[in-house]
Length: 166
Image 1 (tube, rainbow, N blue to C red):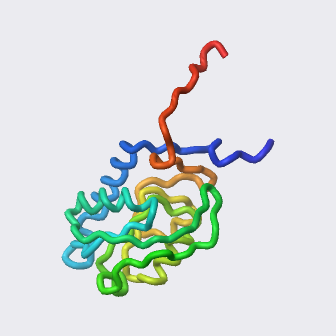
Image 2: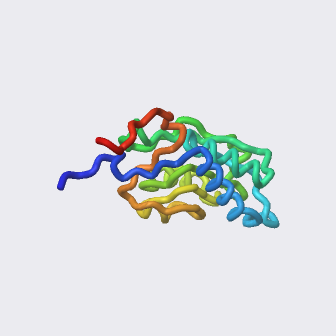
């Protein structure tokens, strides 16, 4: 049996599903901050964490939102993680009271690099794979390590021929 290509064991996430799962993440994080349950800020790991971070910030009424840009993928190939942009240093400190949000933890390398910069931040992802699971504090859905997640920003709607009659 040949190895599967990434798309052959795919988990397709629609915008609606991402929105529901991100809201569920916000509900799980509500009241869990260190300052009487409140969070000081939300930082999205770009690019995948931007949509969930915005939804979490809205749901929890957090007005301070920033980003940390980490590049760890070239299309479907994982590479050495590299920080391209840091969030505001004054805002971040050691990360206490800050939610750092990403769409997915896969190998954990991206979160490992960001966690080393902000060790007291709370790391949350919408989806988690087993290898990266130890790097995240809160997540909503776990998928197998060999599953490729297709996010809505990577997809386009197109016509598909019906199966019947082939």
